[in-house]
Amino acid sequence: MSGREPTASSSQLVLIPSYNTGAKLLETVRDARAHWNPVWVVIDGSTDGSAAAVQALAADDGGLRVLLLPHNQGKGAAVLHGLRAAQAAGFSDALTMDADGQHPAPLIPQFLARSRERPDAMILGRPVFDASAPMLRVRGRRVSNWWTNLETLGAGIADSLYGFRVYPIAELVAVMQRQPWMRRFDFDTEAVVRLAWRGVKPINVDAPVKYLSAEEGGVSHFRYGRDNVLLTWMHLRLMLEFVLRLPLLLWRKLRRQPPFQP
Image (cartoon, rainbow, N blue to C red; front, side):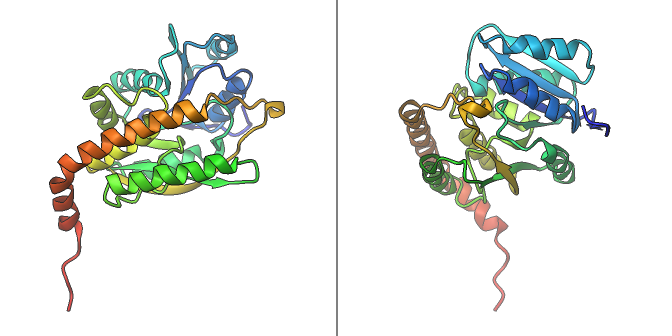
């Protein structure tokens, strides 16, 4: 913890899902706690022993809570587990961030402040890449962003994959409980599409992202073939549903248009 006290809240929390993130998990949690109170960690069936250090930290830190899942269920499932517990505890908003050190903990207060100002919105990180970003990943996300823009009729989602963002808890839990998807790598994209369909407005805020090398302790569970198949299946499902929703989405979009001024 730094010498400056972290911002405390009884309605907003930081939620960090983690699966086999190694030593980076403890570093990420400490960085998050230096800027916010409370921070919750959901251990998604990790088998690398990384949970032990965080549990030990939580034993002496009332602002840190660790939730354990018995086996790996996927990022979306871990987030949903944390959201349900947070909703039961009376929280209204959750900032999600990855456990692998890619996301900027110093921006946590800024993002949650924007959420307080706009409780009707989701605050989405717009990634600012540096030289560490693999070009294959950067170009690949442009494809997903193009589809997301189509599926939401240009709702204004700048990036569909960056997981540093603030969600209204009740809205997202309601979305996820109504269908069985969004439990793994498809979570981040499908969450913003379905929330946009519900009328939750996206607000994009620039945030740096860093891809850490193995020497820096970076851990990635992304598998190019497997996860792109999952994203393709997700967009196919969303497009089929989009066609059914199109009349309602067009009606909403037309209602939001300003009247014509000659």
